[in-house]
Image (cartoon, rainbow, N blue to C red; front, side, top):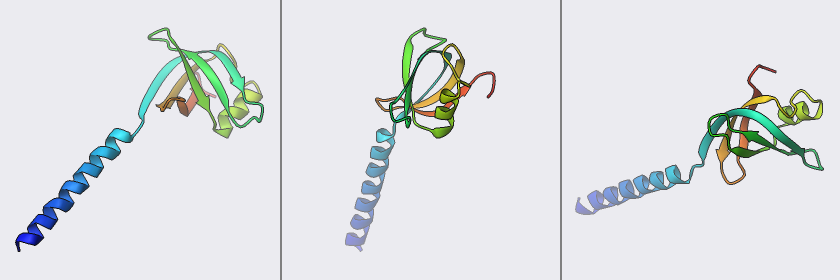
Length: 106
C-alpha cells in the first residue's frame, strides 16, 4: 500500500513538473499596429521580412512572413510600404508572423 502511494505521488510530481516546463518553453505572442517602413522579399520568394513602426512605442519591429497569402499580397502590391498593418507574431527571435493584415481590410 505504501509503495503504491509513493509511486502515485512521484508520477503526479513528474506530471506537474513537465507541465511547468512546457508552459515556460512556449513562445510569447506579440501584437502591434503600425505602418510598414520596409518590405524585403527573399530571393526564392518563400519568405519576406517587413519592418513595422509600432504606433504606440514608435520603435521599429522586424517581422518574418512565410505564409503564401501574405507573400502573394506583397508580390502583387496589395500590401506596400506605408500601409498600416495589424500584426500578430511569435516572439521567438525571428518574430515569426501568425497574422499580417491591413487595418482597412484586404
